[in-house]
Length: 140
Image: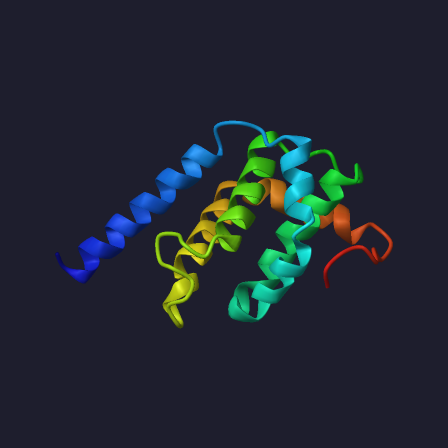
């Protein structure tokens, strides 16, 4: 199997997992459980390179949704954000995170899919966020 075929196979697997993750709205308990893992998420930031700002934005969206500050998110976007962070925190995924450099490539692939699929909703959140006073509960 060529490298291109392996990459296409991995991409298809990631897309399939995300599609499965978008089949139902996450429960309040699932969101609370994820938010309780903030320290683990923060620990991964240095490994995400230039995409860390996108990850922080999604985390802050989830916090604002959970805290009732921004409820205009469609449930599929909330499900996508939850799926991304659960996937990010799972060390055994399409490409295990313990593999140096490449271990987070699939995590960033899921991030890219979520950002692309919900770009207009994310832009609306950014507009709303810019109109708000500085929020000390956000990850900056």
